[in-house]
Length: 157
Image 1 (tube, rainbow, N blue to C red):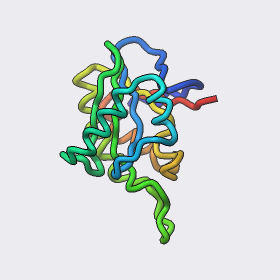
Image 2: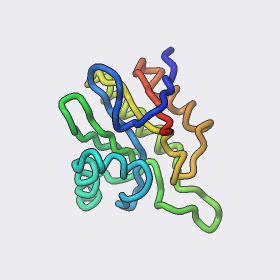
Image 3: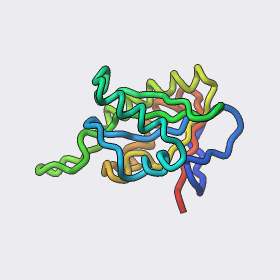
Image 4: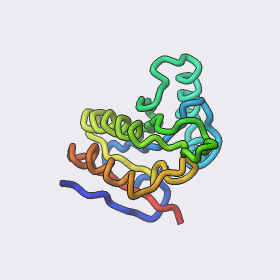
């Protein structure tokens, strides 16, 4: 089985040949404005615009759904709804929804295979969503790696 390749650098600037999908986690309330999405918006306007349109149309805008937006000839951005709201609730429940992330990554695996694309991401779900990488990593193994998709995880310096 493939393993995750860890790189130092910027996930919005993937360093491999061929088609690339940059993936990240979005919330289910239409909010875009903090964290990694800002790095995406600094490079391309389309992923944010498409996410906002998707939210307004409400069609399939639910946890576990994905949206693929082409931003360059060989680069796509995948908006994955894997976060419920944006803040930890009064019971201490974090925004991250691991089961939604898993559904998203299963769908992403199919898209990556169709596009013959590698996947590039920061440590998704571990910033504002409050998730733990020890939980996310096995999900990536069960979904993307099991389907022989190349995965690159970037740690921003």
